Image (cartoon, rainbow, N blue to C red):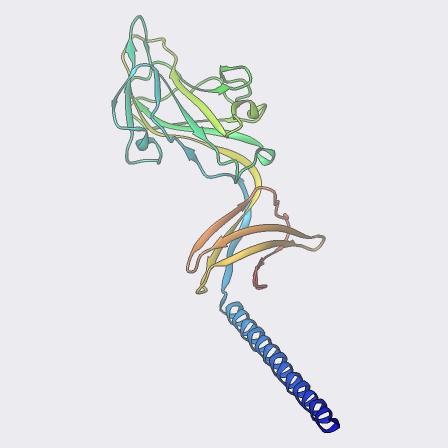
Length: 295
């Protein structure tokens, strides 16, 4: 009996040793696998970081947005359309939409269109004013032409707050540019979706029927921001996560999230960044930790 008991004790110790060795081997395999995986991931991250190639080709202050143009056909309150579509009024030069006045005691044309500002790029809190521009050609020059916009607060068309309310006195059979600025109470002309309703009409003082060619009809906003021209020469998409503006007196960081694809050139505009008047350094930091510098 004692012999059997002793043998069982020795077998238990042997089994315990085997279990300890097996568990140790499993633990070693897990540790080694994690080390190898971590090393691979670090090597991959380092490789991707080394391959990233982002450059700032230019950085400068910007006071105007790009032009926002018509997205739908013109509403004609008085007059009629002869040819073309609103698509012909989206670019300067080359094509145009043609309208003709309605004749009664006086000839008259009144057209309007919605133009929407991108408020995600140009939030209203950073907008300082609105500009409206038309380029048009008329066959008769005996009267003035006017721009007005719909005042969403007053619920009517108005030119209150415009820098020019005298209208445009065009030359006939020539292209005329007519622009106005709205600095005071401009927010009354922009609805919560960023839309302006702009009206173009003549004075209605002559009996001669005028044909009008509209080449350009657009709106842009006045800002005090910064423009960064970027180029990604690397083989993968770069994700910019921070901007630093540095000069002799200030180091300012701005958070961001902007992606630029491989081989792409892009422009990034920030309405909340005002570049220093003196010498400065702009730094863009990517998610992988690389820094593009413009001085």
